[in-house]
Image 1 (cartoon, rainbow, N blue to C red):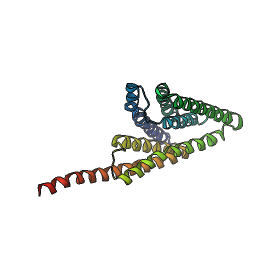
Image 2 (image 1 turned 30 degrees about the vertical axis):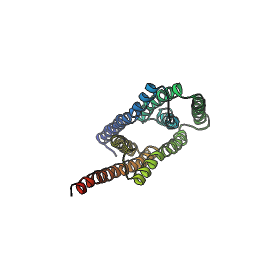
Image 3 (image 1 turned 120 degrees about the vertical axis):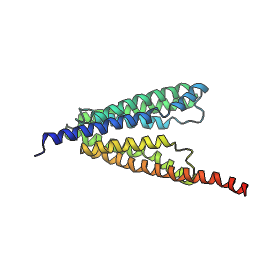
Length: 235
């Protein structure tokens, strides 16, 4: 029999991991602010793409629904982090639509409506076709698929860093926040015994660690390369 003290300790540790994940996720949510300051200042979206924010919104909505007590009781911190994320993505998308040219504006509005429509279908299907025991499984698989698809972007960044041997397009603090957020929610999922949380965030932890290792390696290489011409010149 598990003692009440042990259960309490597990609860405190899982809550601490979830709160930490929320805090690190907030850093990720605010990271696009400089981009949107530039958009507002120049009153143009220039060559920026709005698709990452559309994908991020869909991911946040699905994961938000998975964390709701009516779907999966006891993981409210998943719902809180994704509700904040959804608000940020909506703000970014609204700004993007405001300053986008006509064709891009129409495309973004269409994609936004598609996201809301798909989310509504997921909510209705999960409520009408599944009971309380199977609903978390249905929504959980969707959230895992959504999260893993989101991890495609770090793969592109990792490939770019290796190909160019430069960390210019991989900001250190963004990579660090991604790693810390993923490992926090990995721990949260493990303590909650929820594979729909710890599996995708375990993948995110590995990818975040790879980014940090690459950053350390290629930033060191860049510094050594930048010193070598000075040595040769002096000789």
